[in-house]
Structure formats: structure tokens, C-alpha cells
Length: 593
Image (cartoon, rainbow, N blue to C red; front, side, top):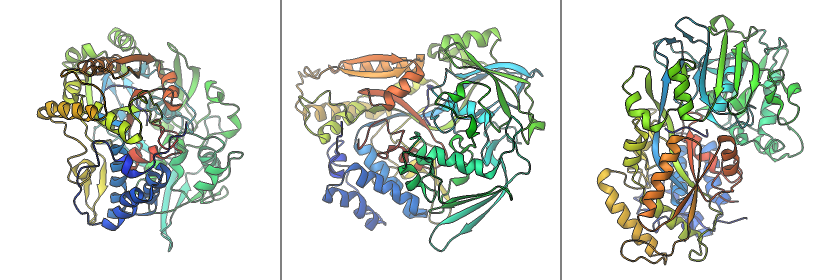
């Protein structure tokens, strides 16, 4: 999921070309699943496959396989992705926030969700928090931002939900939400069917009945080619997705989803045994929307239309900079007895200084961002928190941007140039001097803490097997002692592309533009990059946009280089990798387009 906080057709001819970050990928040892590798990476190289026929095809296989075979396909997808140089990981995320010492009942998840409906502050049930700026959309099917998901998760609830832990930790656990129970049935064709029984008498916040068909119809809308939502591909594990996604005129039902309103049952047929499916049912895109309220793209901006089925309902929606969203309890929520807050206000701001000032005055009881130059001092207080988070902060390149086309003539040369720029970045400096919240330098895109299931059923962390040789070394070296050698390697790579080097700096590289959204942290990183590249004669112009505008600029491909961040939507590497398929709404790099 797109993360705001700190801390035209170009055909990629062959995967052999794609893998030219620094020449070919590092020499790879023989792999036990050699037949799989040959059929994808080496086969694509030989047969001159496009991005759709190579990367997309590998991702498609992850949906149809399981266990060690599936893991290998996922690792191959990251091999291809990292070979382009268009995704340059900087660090693995941590979650920094300020929480009033007297707040009780707040909880969160490492996926970025934060929940306040069970929280009080020194016994008070009315208070204000800030988790982000105005939203680009709070439509569950359209939103792709973390702060938007926090709003949605207070108003809507899926078949499963993230519950408050009983052990006093803040890390949420998965439990049934609108579903009372489910049965999982394996088919002879490799398909798996989940049969959900809904809770009795569940309702929307306006008191109307919520039916199994509301889930089915909402999922059809979210997956449809007509809506073309960024997260439509989240349904690609459901039978019938391809037909629904291809229909640009209707909200064609997913053939694998069958609803029985009389019995209160929902049957979902999957193309394989998807290990993270229950987590998907807790994801905002899988929420049941009251479709008769969806009139136009801005339906969600009016409180009277924003009818959900979660613990809170919106009493005021003022979605603008400096505005706010007010929530009150949803008395029709099945678990309303456990809702503690009586009035919750989300102040909307992306100004770090403004957030901290309101927090210090006591007007805001929780903030999700602080000024970078204040972190060292703030970290001494008991209300300063840093939690683990499953995500990666990275620099993204638009592969269709050809700002250097007078010198660089092929995608392979652009990939080499991007990789070289990545080697000029001192990730340890960014983590220690700018991030200052326990971030770790990243040499993979898939975030640290993501797990994979081994052949014997045990779990291991993805990064311990990352890299072309599955040895945990990732795709380049990020140790402090490696930075000087990385820079020397980058210089040779850029020189090899034909740019002139006078012994200290390059003299003929055209200026590049780096785009970021308003935040002291993002600005500090942008200014660091500008200085690091300038030391080698590379001029990086900086451009800042407010959050909602920034999201759409990046999505539309109207940029050259930009900052980006991604939090996992579920604990599986696929959450980081299937977003880069040709038709994905989150493919901001424009691969295959």
C-alpha cells in the first residue's frame, strides 16, 4: 500500500535486456528448481518476451502453485524487477508515532493500520488525532494509500478484521469480522473453496440489512475493468477474475463468488490454495460497500453517503487541507459494545511542524509524523514510539521517461544508469542521520519481516533467501564499508555508457528531476540525493507536491524519478511483487506500457 510518511509504449524486448543493471545479473548457482528457472528467466531471454509475457507470466504462476515452487517463482519475479534498476530500495520501514501517555486501547498492525475506536485518553472518549493529510479517495475500492485505509478501516469491515491483542501488545491479530465462521474445501483441480457463514443480523450503519450479495456485488465492482481500480488485481486469485477485469462496460460478477442471502452464506472459489486469502478479506478493497449510495466518483465526500458496516460512522466529512473527519459510534455494529470512543476526530495535515505543535499543546493526542530535526529530542520521551513495519522506502524511475535519450539508446543502458545512481546512495547515512528511527538499509524490494513457507512447513524470512543465488545477499551490498566501492563501481558503469568524466565529476549528464510529496523527512532525503549526485556532476532538480496530487502524478507517469514507499497489504512477498504487472493500477514505474 502506498505510504506517504517517512519514516508511449516502450516494449522491454527481452528479460536478458531487463537484467542489465550492471551487465547481466550476478552469476547464479544452479537451483534445485532449475526447470522452473529455465522456463521463465532463461526462456524469456531466448524468446525475446515482453514484460507481459515474462514478468506477468511469472507472477501468474505464483497464483497457480504453492510451497517451494511458488516461492521460487516469487524470487524470480524479484530478480526481474531488480534487474531493471527502476526500483531502488533505500531502507526497510519502521513505524514512528507520538501517542499521548494516557491513551489506552490504541492498537495497530505492521501492515500500517491504526485503530482508535477502542481507545480513550485519560478516560476521555472524545479526542483528536492526525494520521495524514486530506485523502485522494476514501472509496474502499479506489483507495491505495495507508492513511486512507485507516479511515476506511474504522467505517467498513470485511469478512475478517484486525482485532485488539489481549496480551497488551499493539500488534493486531486476525479474527472473524462480519463472518461468523468458514469452511475450507479443496477441489480435485487444485482450486480451493472458502464457504463463509455470515453473522446473524449484521447491518450497515443506517440500519439496513447487510447481505452476502453485498459482498459479491462490491467485489465485482472493485475487480471490474469498468472501475479500473488500482487494487483490482487483488481479486486475481478468485475464479472469474480475468473475465470481470476485462469487462469495461459492466460490473460483471466474479463467477467464483456465490452468495446465498437467505442462508447468509458466501462461497468463494480460488484458483489455488492462496496462503494469505483470509488477510485479503480484512483488506479495505474487500469491504462491502452500500452500492445505492455510490453515485459518482465523489460519493464518499458526503457523510450522509458514506455508509459503512464498521465500528464507527462518519458524522462530518471535510476532506481538505486543514479540514477534519469526525466519527461517532455505529450503534448497528455487531460488536458495538466494545467501542469506547464517543467522538473521534481525524485532523487532516501533512505539515510536520503543525502536527507537532498541536500535539504539544494537547489539542491532538496522536500524530503519525514529526519534523526530522526534532526526532533526536522527541525520542527521549515516553510518548515517542517506534514499532516494526512490513515495508520498504524506495526511489522509483519512470521507465518511459527518456530524458537521457541523446546518449542512452536502449533499455539496457537505461537500466545500467539507474542501477549506477542507486549505488551512489549512502543508505546508512539516510537511516542514521535522516530517518533516525531504527530503519535498516535495504538491498531488496520485498520488505524485511515478510515470511515464506519452506518445503517442511516451517517459516523463514524472505530476505534470508533473497538475491539471484537465494543466499540472502540481496541485489547489492549496503554495508558501511561497501559505500566507497559502490561509488567507484557506479562511476565505471556511467563512464561505460559514454558520459564524460574529468576525473572528479561527469560533465555532460543532462539535469534530472526528482519528485516527492510534502514532508520534512521526504524533503531531507531529496536534498541528500541532490547533494550526493551533485558531488559527481549530476544535477538533480527537486519538485514537491501535496499528497493527493503527488499520488496521481506518479500514477499517470508524469515524472522522471520520484520517492515512493510500500507497506505490505498482507504478509507475503506477492504483496510487493504483483503490483508491477503490466495492468496493475499500482505500477507507477510504467513497466510494459
